[in-house]
Image (tube, rainbow, N blue to C red; front, side, top):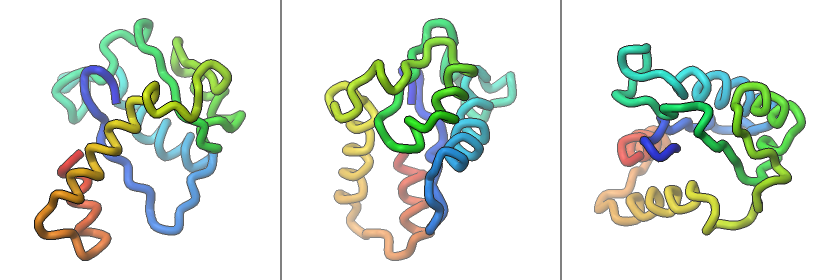
Amino acid sequence: MSFTGLTELHIVPQKQFVDQEYYCNEILEGNLFPIMGKNAAGGSKFGFKLVPQMSEMIFHEDGALAHTALRTQELLQEKIPNFWSKDMWPTNSPDLNPIENLWAILCDKVDEEKVQPTTIAGLENFLKTSW
């Protein structure tokens, strides 16, 4: 997420462990990096740039093992000019991690749904639509 909008929701396949390899290859290099600076004319599905000025962006993550792994930290330092490493941000601070608020909103949408999804595919579709 950024102040201009959201990426697509990435749903991790069942039984897939999110380690540093999966996180770097599938989530960062496979999804996030390709769309960060692109607008609709530049090849993105989105009608806006997720990050208008890379030099003005600050990128941070929570303390998940895949986020704090050496490979992840090195990749992010290489690709993102203003990456805040694992030592620069409180990892367990929901008030400082805006994604926690977004997850709460998404959970509320599921709870408010009159007809709850009954299959994994139905839940995935609902989450992607709500996102």
